[in-house]
Image (cartoon, rainbow over the protein chains, first blue to last red):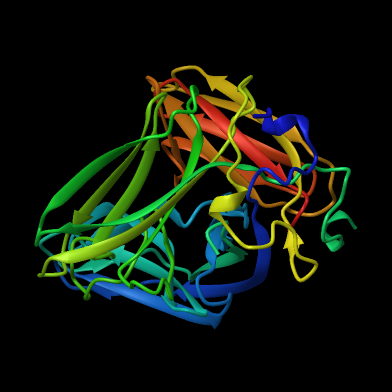
Length: 138
Length: 222
């Protein structure tokens, strides 16, 4: 046995290989009207990666100075309204594979209130940077 | 540029120290939790993948998966997560919304944390026929380490890692608390521990969060 981190490369251990990378964005338009207890979803899909590849990701929002965050989900609280009342709600950007060689990024707002939610003014655009990998099981 | 090299002796390759795969069936609306001994003697940095397809044609990461129908209370039909401790790899699967039993196929591989002083058995025979192939560009590790964040339930704390690569690098990170470690795949800007890579730094921020150790790996690949 050996201590793995002592070696730059070691034929004793499986490793990971880069496969593909790409960027895609999705926009959630401002001032959307969302019926009670429903969600509104906008999405974009790109061709990325090969059959069986796994992913790493980072996401940013134009409403947060396009600061990148590592992860497959990024959530913010925003200010909206139901009739007569200012309320907060969450907007979530999520990433998932939708086919062997396609990645979809979604922007989702769930209205948890029992009245129609009007979301914050101004479009919010999420940008995804994704890398795919040949995993060590291949 | 460092990422243009298939292999670069300036930076170590990732070395997988444990691998496991299998399948499990989860009932409608059900939950399954399985524990698999890893025998490593330390808490490894585990990364899980899963699928509902026996041929692994579509691979999902932790906490994401096939989309649920609109107006569901979760965007995904299932939840899959992996936690590692000093003894086991623990896999948890929830079948939220599919309306039927589902067979989940899983694969977990583990990397060695920077805190490990252990010797580890070989894993290369478990994987690809070729350890290194010039068809592939291998991930190149620039920096690996950890930081112990204090309790930030009522505050905020940040820690920066300088890499000066001039590119926004690939980063993966895990949170270890109370002897259990899991990869972070979700960022919520007002609570939890987030990771912001820039062209010269990686900024870890804890806000509204319990104390915890963050393990990170920064790569020369963008």
